[in-house]
Length: 181
Image 1: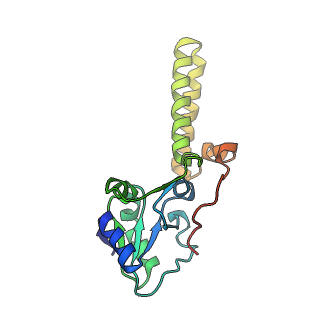
Image 2: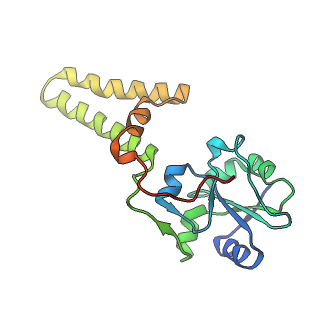
């Protein structure tokens, strides 16, 4: 099981012990905002990717709020192997609250799941408004979006995310820290 440490303790381990910091968020999240020097190893690719760490040096895992790292602590501990491994309590949010440095690239698009939430919510509201003011047939738009969300939840496949991923604003604009090798 992984030990939990604060953001300031994590910063000390990075500075004094040469710890390896691993960001388990998806690549699009990491590209937009990250802790400088953090390696990106998304949970969705955890089993297939290698995590190169130096023997005897701690490994620190973080996500945005700490929920993903805590929820996957056993998987992350297995990935860390024999190294001393930690979860940064509160993740990137706690890191920022502690006044520690964060690299931001606002040219990168919003995270894909946030785009899905904005688009789905907007379509539901649009369907309700048009259904109430133009024609009851527009309520079908809200029903269609709701059915799509149910399908995405059951199958793990989101059609709207696939469409949004193809949009021009979701094409990478700059290189960022690669996935851990």
